[in-house]
Length: 338
Image 1: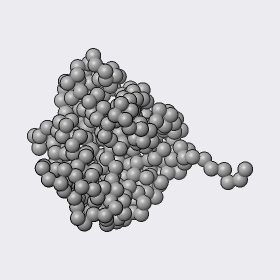
Image 2 (image 1 turned 180 degrees about the horizontal axis):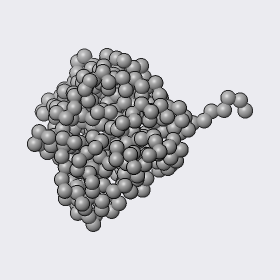
Image 3 (image 1 turned 30 degrees about the vertical axis):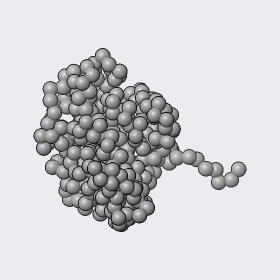
């Protein structure tokens, strides 16, 4: 199992770079950042600084969308970073949430998401692609490599992920819900003639090492609100009686709205509807042993990467314990002499 860290690009940017260096030092393989240009700093500028300050960690947005930038611009960013720093980028993409809603836009359609994935991936892999009636290719790009992982919750997005995604990003760590969604993605991949095992499966959730459960829950309750915002879209489209598990849809009954000014932040002032049970199920909290136990469950259902959000007050200590205890416990064990 691989391990990633998810950061917000809050100023100063040097702090984000410093945390990325710590993540690499503690053995994390991936560094992800939010991509919402009004709420936080522009991620790709900071990605360049992170790549320059590190040696091996893979860097990407968590997640970008097809609406904020022209698809060829997004592809050019990845191809450029790959030329500058080696092929150490990855693209997480979804239909668009905070980045488009804050500017009074709306998420793209499934068809647009599908097409954008194809265009971005082909161009960022130094290949030609049809776009707006012409065949385009970066004449300066040679040997660039980029995987595109799709963030999804609803049935149509999960199906699309199985059909075209190099990876699947699920932003919650409930084992039962994750197992159901991974199966949907794998079934869609098989139906499309793809090898389901070729897809990477990334579960992302807040990770907090500690023993004060009330404090940890309060620091991470924002995540249930963020997930609930996505779930509300699903409920509005499919209702509560469809294929989506009730465990995912029932808890938002008390939700009254969402304020993007508090998006992804601890001490969020509009997540009182999120009960402790949901925080515990959706997040990884507690001692190293608690984390290891849940990660072993996630690995058993096919998760290939856990990406931990660090939007709380215990960033460095959590990464340290992961590096010293959690990541080694999930690594393949090699015997020196037999």
